[in-house]
Image 1 (cartoon, rainbow, N blue to C red):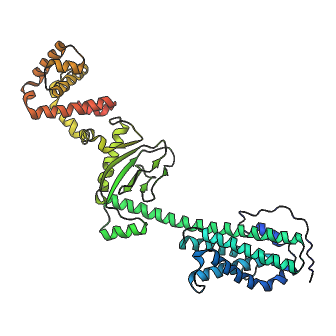
Image 2 (cartoon, rainbow, N blue to C red):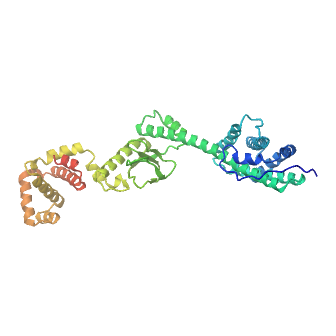
Length: 423
């Protein structure tokens, strides 16, 4: 048995994870005697074949013909890993210009895994299987040549440090590829959302092409959601990946396809949900969602983390056109113009109670919490002010609409709307 001079100096702990330039394994490889490396070199081909065989046996996804694309990737990965290791063992690059080239190799393998499988499970398992095969061959070689226990331990540490490093490098390549795809998809989805809302896609085919570029399936129906602005970046806590969103604009909003539920929102964000509509009517849904959010901001509808437009349809209708409402108030309530603000408020309240009650003074008094005689006196005043118009069903309807809108505005503290409604 040939005995090799394998004396090594004591080594200090070295990093084995997260090294982008093989810093951990390189220092360990450098401690292995050079003549031992040269003696092992002829065994590298057999070790590579064993690695390929074991990887294909252990990982079903890689158990494909070696002359196919997957087989070529496996052989290339094993070959590059061994060449890189020998490069570090020799202390000089071998068949590569620099260590940066080796880094690119393992980055590339990570990118391939993202493209082919969408995860790193197979590749990282292959690296670890390869590491175990390498260690088995190295240990048998060391026993045959009488290598000291100290050097064997350094070899073991170097192999597994190296496996950790190439796993880290391929993870970086995988993440970079994922980020590129996600960034591109995000940009395409932003454009798609803008086109859907603007109606500027010239044909169904153009819209379908945009959706395909954005990896998004065109739904039949959508629901738009208006979001409140917050200080700082706006983000979703969680949600369906099919949700289209604009979180950076002055009026952030979401598009929920089909029956997709509303994503979880950050605590400080409020949402107003519009009607479910056809895809072509998405802008209409967003308009009503924003209208709901506006009325919630003004206190016309109750404040809530999530407010749905269809829970306040009457209020939405009453406030759908405030200019028209102001014009109705100016026309229908003009008999109250000569009263003081306090008198006007009291008579408006009495008139609405009378219209609701469709009865006499006792019913009005019960609504207002006043004595029936007081109610009777006010009703007579109203009859004097409005005259025969109170006998006209159409006029009574117009008065009730106007007064209900006024009441809602006053109850919410929306003074501007209240002033418009009573102008």
